[in-house]
Length: 438
Image 1 (cartoon, rainbow, N blue to C red):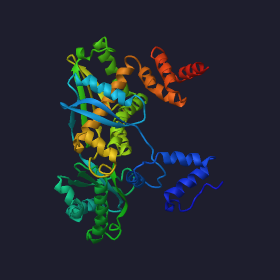
Image 2 (image 1 turned 135 degrees about the horizontal axis):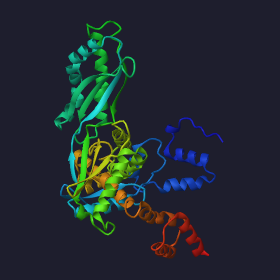
Image 3 (image 1 turned 60 degrees about the vertical axis):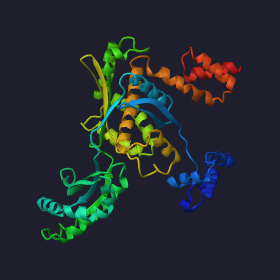
Image 4 (image 1 turned 30 degrees about the vertical axis):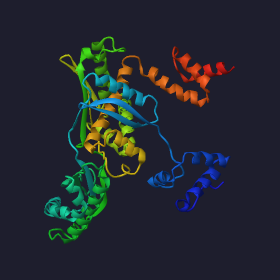
């Protein structure tokens, strides 16, 4: 069968799903039914979903959970988390409860600077280019006044524009490196609009600059785009308490636990193979909140992982130490987030999530997201250094295995009762179900 199609984007939604069903499925009606079962019954909401992206054929659902009891800077929060991985929300909630009786989480936004660049090729005198950029800087600002006016009213705008010489890395390669403050918006559209105007002004003014030769006037702009690496848009989150206060059911010896915990973090600081998995656990918490609030988790992921490797080797995002009888655990991460713009005012569940968080500013959301990452990391390391991570994870995973076998309610009771006292593994559950059904 021919699996190519012409003009797919111009087909109606019904035509698109009919083509998918008839091209890829031996039982097209089953595929059609499944796709339509995931449509929203409210036509207005479904239209919103259809217009969020292109070639929409259905909705792809993720669970939206909440983790309560987060004490952040002496204020309690319930954090919404959109994630499919079992145990993540439970682990976050467990950490929140643990630290709520030990002073809670403390956070600080260190900076909120965002970055954009105009990448261009210039063949000529570097000194003349530097003089040109210095003399033209005011014109970059003037040319973008219509773009920046509203942002400036909110206290944001262009912070600085500088020339960066990258010819040691690539022949004739230079950048206009610009920094921005975008307040409560993530700012991607704002930054990119400014950068494209910078590029236009750069080329136009170069043609008029008398000190340039004919060749030097031919500046070639390669591209103008924001950077998702924001090493000066940083938030810190931390927890601390006396070592003796760490005691709980699974921490019988607080001193031993604290020392082992610090060692585990240190291993992630020096060993990239461990650091990747360590940081993935942090991102379980961060991504879940970023997704629930309709921020760009791909941009956040890319920026954070670049930050983790900023010193030449990929390393842990979190750190821990014992000092004068006190256990301290903290994280510093770059987070470019927004609470206005994008889908924040369109997606009903995003509006609900932000309402649960009591409609935070971008700075407040940065702090909440960082705390979710730190809480997730604490939960993982506590399990790894005490009972092991699989015990809790597999118990949470038990539901998924049960669902694979369409267990009825009485079977579910028998299965759960059996695995309250026995180790959970996929093979063990399958064997138990098989024997039970005999």
